[in-house]
Length: 426
Image 1 (tube, rainbow, N blue to C red):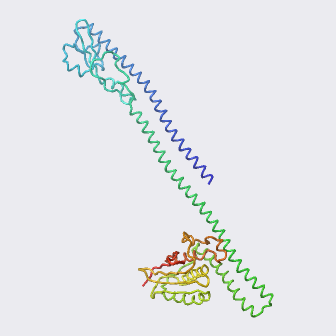
Image 2: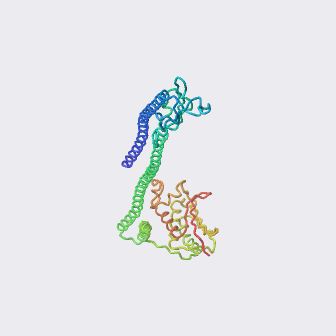
Image 3: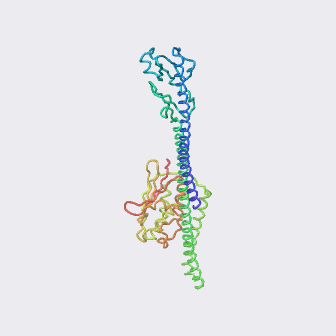
């Protein structure tokens, strides 16, 4: 658990560092690009302004040297120039839609038209800078190109931000996935630790129950043997003690058999038959055999068995389940006032068998846990009640593997009710 916690902390720290690194790297990249673009911007603005100043000076010199020149003049032939004309020959609307310099000599004023797309062509494709549309009209100075016209390309910064967001999304998605795995791993580790504690508790309960169950009959048998030895095998005493010893041996054998059944069930060494059974007849026969034992214990047995109920199953296994349920009722019931009702009826496609007693019932929330092996609830309060906590576990496994279902509950009028459900056949 400690190693897992350290790995979780290291992973979270690593992911946080990667995210912070990506953000800082993106900011540093944008800062570097801003600085680099600013230098490139100033360099290009200077080059363009020097070029336009040279064109302006060449146009002025050409006008003075050749007042009657024809446009374009060889001295101002340049991709940045669209033409040179006398102002008197130009319509007013042409100037409104053009970008130009006004050049005057002593006699005439000339208009030097500029190619408005030239700065953009000068930058070329793929440049980190872009040329924004230049203004229309007359330019008052040759160095008219400014940082408002030549600007860094915002698409470049947008691409950096897009990559930053892409990486952040990738880290967040991967981080979320790994966080989910961490949460799942934490849950599985927690469940594993919880299951380990539960297994330890079950082992302690098993040792407690088994030693308790073994100690009582062994002690009893030892006392009986000592008594017989002291009394030199008196026939009357032997006739009284031998049946009790036999009962204790039977109890030991039943306990050992239950433990062996658990092992065989876990290793799937028990085969269950699915023979046609007249459940009504078998249950009546079982109740008839049980009546004497019940009356001897001071209890009353009632039956409500519907005729003609047939199922598929293993009658020997079912009788063992019934005996276990009856044994529980007698152990936990009120001595001398115990009443047990065995009922069997058809319900749609099912055969429903119920055992209802007037005992203390099932503690709330224990209905499922009582089916766990070796679980007996509060063991301190069960010390006076014999048992290993295997009876209901074996009963559920036997019923399930016979194709049925078993459930525990409390009856409305009090007491415990055990319901077994099987698919009936015709």
